[in-house]
Length: 117
Length: 112
Image 1: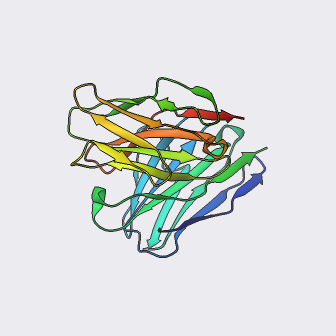
Image 2: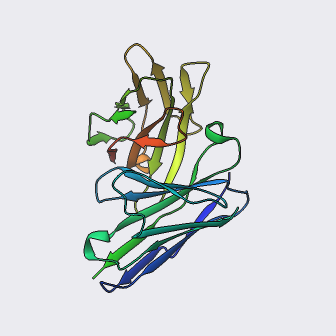
């Protein structure tokens, strides 16, 4: 099956710094990528949807200026958490889907655990 | 809008026992339904999905789920579980917007 990687797998940063998380589709072109956030013992919450070459669409309640998403190529999307604070600590998971929309499976990355001190 | 309810947050079972993880959904449009499995500190892996056709779908490792439109359910079953099935299981629904809506998950623990 298709492979999606995330880097880094875990990161610890100080409050006020920015952190960038990369999501790559390794063996297919991802026209759409999704970013999720998962709190401990809770479900995944969709943060935003990004299509290659266009601005991301954020879900209600997600601060677009805090969570910057870039989908510059068909194999790479990045999530930047700006001025991170302890409440931003979470498990961030991306997924990628090839052209064909909902008829094609979303493939998930392994996740990035962010800890803000 | 869609929503998913997983009725059990934790399900402990003994090895080789049968298991059922329950999932109910709410939607005003036709949906696609999914079960994902998540092992500790890992991302999600697709276990099985219902898109159309036969209401009974199966995975390669012995799980099956049945889409019941009248009861708006998509329960996951396995007749005999293994220790290696211990994981978190998420039910998800997609209602035409290409967005997956997840349930809160069910932690399956298989004990020897």
